[in-house]
Image (cartoon, rainbow, N blue to C red; front, side, top):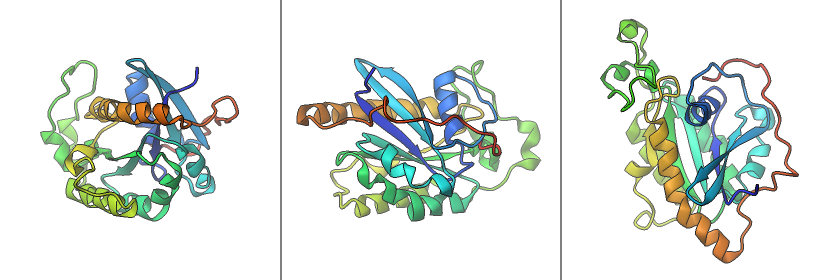
Length: 233
């Protein structure tokens, strides 16, 4: 089945890209191992088939990122809210990889691991509180302060618009494109992915109208299996 469009997760190792995708697609959280190369899921969204690519954050696989981004309708740039360097890496290492994405590509900023922060005790419960774990209040003493806040993510989003030479007036507003999530508890994960899927439908339709390739050829693209190399949450 050939996908109609493609979404790619980019970000440094251990920010939780794989765990976010597992949480959304498989409805569960597990301590995952580092991704080697890339892997993908297919998601049916209305009449469209969307491939969602999980990419490796380790530097030795960095060059593959541009290939996975080729023709992407959306890129989810993912960081760890407890690790400022993971946000720095997005700008320094990963943003340039998106040069091969679709000209109409949407850029989404996702800060994961909010459950580890002292702000997690005030997070609203998921609508289906039996499906996801509630952040344990008993472990408040182990919580850490955020190193990256939503205003930092919004500032980075505006840098992306400048890098892409996009007019901020015509682009989606930063507050619509910046999310904080927890793959462990499920907080905001559905909202993140479903917002992205809904927003890329016009991009997919535009790509089809222009006869542009929507994604890489899945038959010719090898997806490596995960290998044990430490937990990435």
